[in-house]
Image 1 (cartoon, rainbow over the protein chains, first blue to last red):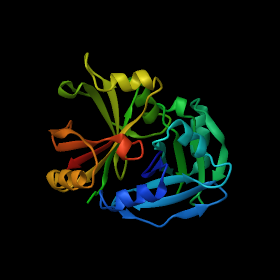
Image 2: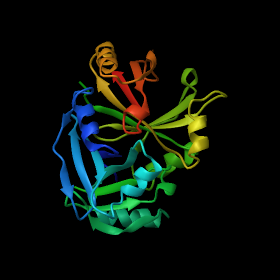
Image 3: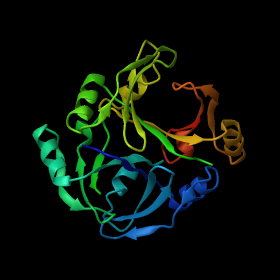
Image 4: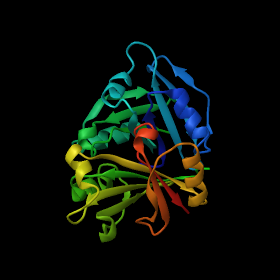
Length: 132
Length: 132
């Protein structure tokens, strides 16, 4: 069912410093910050040859990233995202297997249907599925 | 400098359950457990079309994963691994930029030269570099 690893999302406490570090010390291809006010985040994509790293930085007063950064002041990996062909088929299969889907299918920051799976059910990892 | 994302390593508290879940609920291509006694881990690779997930499970009495699982009983993402062409060039560049290299270059679980970077310097993520 799952296909490519679409991205690894890292919550960062200092977006400018994180971008400078990945551009400089790691020599990576770092994009420009994009504000996603509907999702309460500013994102920056780092394009690797086979997948993407997504920096997440809080935007606005109710950012879903703010609490994560309070608990993890140095930052940390926030979620990993696997691609699926059909998000509804994926949801139904996961629910049938007893996995907890957080909320329901939503339109994610990349304008694709996504859902999130409970980290406690998936080895402590918040897992996003994105229909591509 | 960094190339492909070689793998995302997830420390899991129950290797059999994690494999069954990725094979079943997520429909992924899950390999067989491989003991790496020199590294104190049993590993399982999940082959995605563009990269790998590596499950890590403690092996023996001094496993480097045991402490992580004590702090994170549900499991969690342990590290991410980027590929580099030349590990010595990478180390020297990172040291010159002020990043902390944990120990020195070692031969990793995949029989390739690797090094680890301090998570506090990299947005709370333990970063492995592997020469390919």
